[in-house]
Amino acid sequence: MQSESFEYPQFRKYVGIETYYKIESPELFVELIKLGANIQEHRVAAVQYPEKLRIQDMLSCLDGRWEVISEDDFLAFRDQ
Image (cartoon, rainbow, N blue to C red):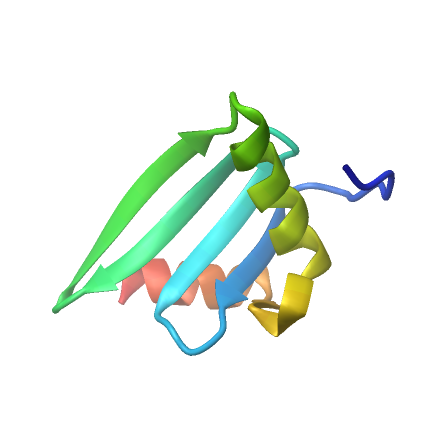
C-alpha cells in the first residue's frame, strides 16, 4: 500500500467510461455509473485487500486509468 496521505474526499473519473468516484477514505468510496439514461450510485466499503488496493490505484491514477476531477464535476454528473 502507498504511504501517501490524502485529504478526503478525493474525486476521480474512469478514463473513457462514464464512471465517477468520490473517495471518502482509504476504506470507502462512492461509485456513479451511467447506464442508459440513468445514474446508479453504489457505496463500496473496502473490507478486503483487493478493494483497498483499488482505492490506492484510483488515488494514484495508476496506469492512466483514472483522472482527477473536481467535486463540481462529480456533482454535475450525479445530478444530470
